[in-house]
Length: 118
Image (cartoon, rainbow, N blue to C red; front, side):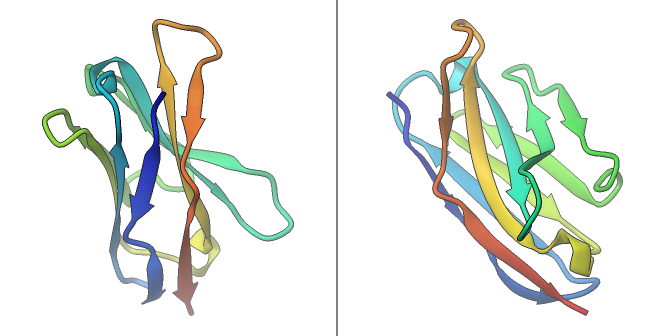
């Protein structure tokens, strides 16, 4: 079982930066594909970025060039560095983990609010 704990959300002005962290419990971090999703009010949850155990990354078009996902295996933590934030980035951000060895085995964090004021 894996528990994910997010931190780093908050209120920031447009153009500013935030870094989200997602700490994973357990001993299988090296097998986890880590991802960040977000959900704005009235909208569906969408993938923001993901990173494989080998550090291959994928980004939503809307955040390419502004957001960077990374991971530290010793710390068992994934990060999302968000720069040049826009009002439309306002959402609850969720950490997600998928065990690539087992289809369908995945975990969610509780979410952290990011609010960008224009």
